[in-house]
Length: 352
Image 1 (cartoon, rainbow, N blue to C red):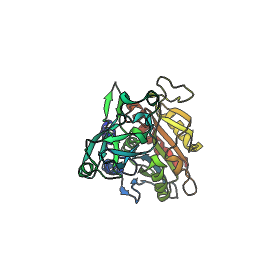
Image 2: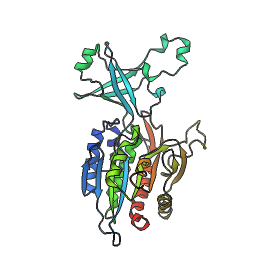
Image 3: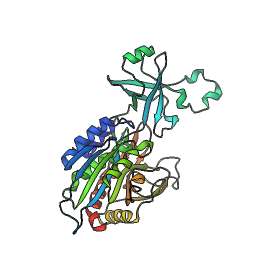
Image 4: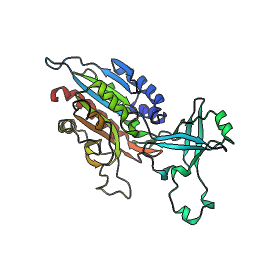
């Protein structure tokens, strides 16, 4: 399956944090041909393992952990009003400004239900009301139900996950838009990396993690069980090449290659890992960018602190409009991230 198609299928799937089942089934299907073992742990992380073909000297093979989170930002049904409107709770970092009038899908046990996020119409708002951001607590989801009883009959239950109704599409020559690129693009990079690796001289774990958006929880559990010697996380980063963004705020640009994290809010990349990534990129003429100071964090922040500590790094895909219903990225950055990951993993037994 082509990389673009892998990304499309992953992007269109629903995997709101804590309800990643649809994505985890896809990840199992996609990784199965390229790993020797495949399992799902107690928390829901999908873990594939490719065994080393040769040992590292006289010792045991190096253990490498690759990680990309499967979950996406979204909503959970909190209450149902007597009139049949759904009030909700935000999962992950969502700016209230992007919620109003968005089309959504409520994923019930019966079937997916389309809906729209509504609020008090601006026509009847007072002037001071129109100047304020409408907070999530004032919004609701309209699924066309006429009462609480009808909403229940339609299949809605408290706690049902709600995803944005946005579909993958190609725009321009190599750019695509879609839902949940944070971090389905990381998942796609990881799948393709395992596909291209071939025989390796290290044990490589590929982990689709859960619950990253609410505290990097899946990676914490998975890393403890795997006990890796070195780790790479695949994620997205802010592409600052849009109007109104200063270079000092977000210097990374779409189409200029994957971004390598030097430091973010949760990780200072291990010097040996960062040096390996930079040297690998330069040796293979792979474009790359360096980034520091981003206020967010990735799964690598928790993996690095596991047990006695794990040298860790991050390869990120520059992405516009992260944490919104629809994001944009360049397929060339995705392909170059795969090239870099493949070559770096092949070199790791000589460096650690």
